[in-house]
View 1 (cartoon, rainbow, N blue to C red):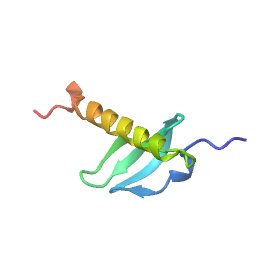
View 2 (tube, helix red, strand yellow):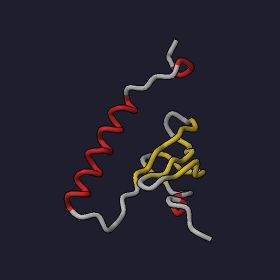
View 3 (cartoon, rainbow, N blue to C red):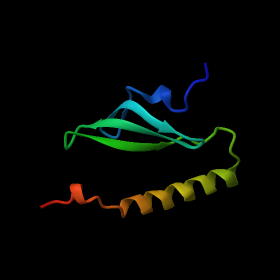
View 4 (cartoon, rainbow, N blue to C red):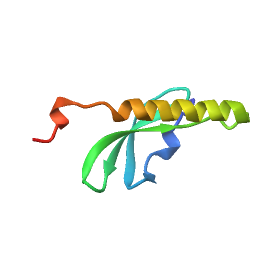
Length: 84
């Protein structure tokens, strides 16, 4: 049986969130359902998992893509999550 990328993180705490369940994974990241401590709620968190064999330029490109994606996601708004 092949290990699912990111599976080893289940149960760990990351920035005040406990990773409870792996929702999905790809070649460079995994998405988890997590329990956030403050405020207390369940949220989805994407964790980037760079391959260990990246050279310096590939690592820089990886982190540039990470920052671009983080910026794009920070602009998203869902109508059910708007404050009244």
